[in-house]
Length: 260
Image (tube, rainbow, N blue to C red; front, side):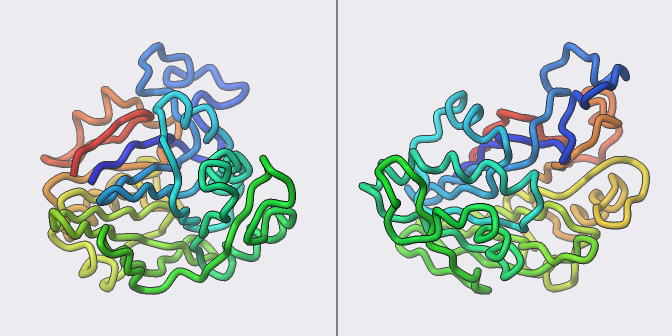
């Protein structure tokens, strides 16, 4: 199993429009962050987690070969506005719709933004087609693996927390973005994972995201072999801030590919 981080920033991205702070002006490529989304390959299955507005750019750059299923963690713009670019992967499926799993809120947003694509086959060749499905607590994708899900608070919304478990290797990957904290259920579900990806917005507290201290506490509770923080603002200077993290906790960056 592997994961590639196609974007690791917030809804505003980094550099931010009209900002000339040290991070936004940095020449360190790890300080350039598109909006957060990722691609997981599990037992030969290609799974897209969210699709930010920059999805097409990153899919070409990092050679995403196919999308078998997509998961929308929630319907905020920075996670959903790249879904139209999945149309190319529908072509590769000979026009079969891509299953999109989400919460009811996420599916309602998918319907509202892409009404022309909610169908089993594209209206015209080259158009996207999505088959919306409520994400179950356990999505059995054998012989490839299983995806477990849990709900987590993100302001007034609930977002999907995901734990991928590959059948052939037994490897486990937790992906918890856009959450104000991890619940006991989420911690138990992810405990002992090989890799945990955790929302880590900034050093200051935030009402709907974990800050760095909270994310590091969550990493310690889960006890993954390695934990990576995601969804960072321009307040995080990668090289400087990573030196302040505890052992086995790191900042992710766009283009980072991890073998699980």
